[in-house]
Length: 248
Image 1 (tube, one colour):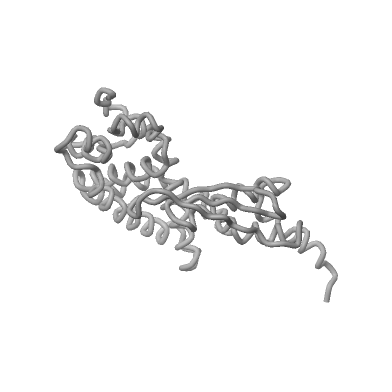
Image 2 (cartoon, helix red, strand yellow):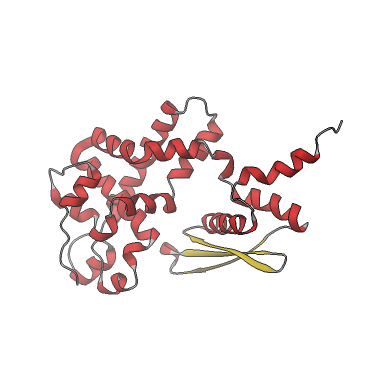
């Protein structure tokens, strides 16, 4: 088993110094590590708390910063950053994977780079910050790490539903609709879903996630990129708009 990580650098990446370092350590304790070591609780309760805190802060930021967006777009904006893939990206940026306490088997299986483990650990760390420093500390952490991401996401809200833009693209290119082949693995409480997109008899995209919808969206995005000329979902309608010029 790897030695305990030095959490000093993680604290710098977070921009927050814990008054109770034990909280941060608990936030990093994956259940696989707890099962091997025995005794200490895993980070799952802190993950539950952090998930709620993250939803609150992102909703607050979306409402106050993006006052031009209607309710439906605010929901889309929140979903664009509060999801497993986005949280895993943030976790990688702050090198959270290096610090997670994993069991030998999970570590050997690449657990430090698994989106599910990274996203859960990030939420647990946020929950720990909330308990250690209160709402202002938690709000500040999310604001630092997510404001720029939200601004970028707000500019591409119409591109978030890749299933829709892929369907439009395949209808134009092949006069057919994409077909999603789904499978899953794992116990009910920790199930993973896998999706493959078939277009005109060919596999053109693959994705996975903790829900069928997430897996299908990831697969649709990959398929869209592979079938598109330039990777811009907005251009999927460009030919249609040009062909309508001059029509009554």
